[in-house]
Image (cartoon, rainbow, N blue to C red):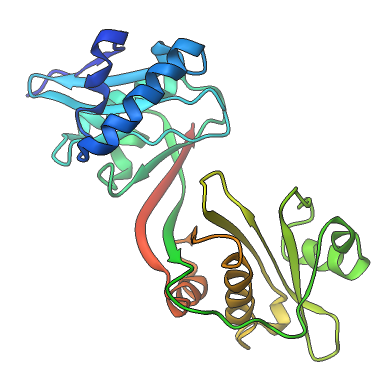
Length: 269
C-alpha cells in the first residue's frame, strides 16, 4: 500500500512540479514562467502542491491567485484512488470557498468517488471542443443583426436573454452580440463572439434559441455565423457544453469541431 504525502517545492526543486508533463519542450517554456510568477508574488509557493509516494511524483496541482480560476490537478494515469483523495483533500483545505476543482480526462482519471471522499461535490460534466477556423469556411446568416452594448439594451433582445437564462450578460470590449430573427422579424436566437485569453483564439457564447423555435436549425446557423465572424480575426476556437447537451454536441460536430477532452466540475461541500 502506498503512503502519500503532500509537498510544497522550493525554487530549487520546482522542476518536480513538471515531472508528469509529457512534453519537455512545453516544460522548458512553462518552468521559467512559473519561476517568474513566484518571484513576483503572482504565485505563492505554498499553492504549488506535489503528491508523492514511494513510487515518486503521483500528482500535482497549482492554485491560481485568481479565485475564479479552477484547479486542474494532474495525476499519474495509474494513481490509486487514495492518492487522488489525498491531493483533493489538501486542495479543499487550501482553496477559498467557491473555488472549483476540475478533473480533465487527459490529466486525471475521471472518477468522482475519490474527490467526493475529500469533501467535494460533483456539479456537472462538460465536453470540450476545438475548432480550426482556417480549415473550412462557414456560412454567414444574411439577416443576422449584430451590435454591442446598444443592441443588448433593446427590449426584445433583453427579453430573449432573460428567457434563455442570461439576464445578466453584459457586453465586454472586443465582443459582438449576434441575434437571428425569426419569421416574424423578432429575435429568436442569440450568441456572441470575442477574444479569449489565448492569442489567436476566439470565444463564443451560444446563449441559445427560444424554446418555441428549437429543432428548426437556428442553433446550427447561429454557430456557423459566429465561427465565420470569429475567423475574420482569429485562427482557432475552443469551447464546450454539458455532456448531456446532445443538441449542442451535434452542432459542434456539424461545424467540424474536434472533441478534445471531458471534464468533471466539483465545488467544496
